[in-house]
Length: 351
Image 1 (cartoon, rainbow, N blue to C red):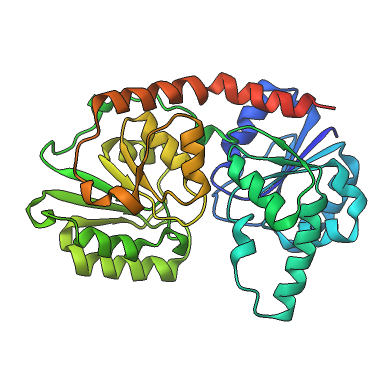
Image 2 (image 1 turned 180 degrees about the vertical axis):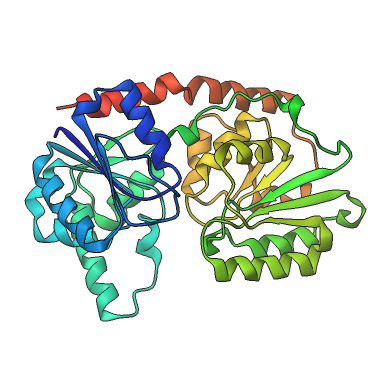
């Protein structure tokens, strides 16, 4: 086995497996998907195993780690992996961490218990000694070096097909042209900080005279938090608040994004980059915080996004046609399918 890919079951993984199998030597890649997760059904085949039960997952994982030449850890969320690599550090020289965001920013979570502190020590050792760090967010690589003293090399790719430029015929979408459609957040993860944005939105000048609808994806993440957001959204905005409580297939979700006029992501860390790049492809106005690595990522790629911190009162001001065109052209140029395949080719073929 040349390349071992290990991931928990997530919504991105099927399209990535398809990308690799269709564009590289399928016999050189093996995918081990662990746990039930939130990604739905994994398409298993000759080079893909979905191990749902803890014991079978562990057995498959141990064997696969030793049989492979190179290992790609898609997100560092699974405790068994961290413990195994901490206890067998000689494996780290062939490991690469595909940084998702939440796995890196666990550093900021308070560790109250002895167990949590011990686990973070093991994570810190693993990250410090891992061979490669794969991310399209250079700022996240710099944080890994700063927080964990990571010694591994940085490899650039924008990771998954979900981040690609989306060519889409906007004219096929049915929407009220007199209404402004606003997306808030991308999931029911508390890091979206929905309620803070709800309160800021209520203070936007002239809001009462605006014809708008709030679309709020809440199908993915913490159910208890989703219910809290649902209640608050209905309380503040009534029938203008439209939560998405059920999981939406990607093709249908793209139809929803195409309908959006303004998107607001209030994450205090790198998150929702796939949503952001898709919306910029579709020429939408996107707000994020200007004090996170995603802001620097957009600047580095020549993408215009708007600051929640500085520009929020101008929420309903139309995005200039020139900005729409620049964002679309930058997405076409830098986030093409061909470039994604080539980025991974460089990573897979390196010595």
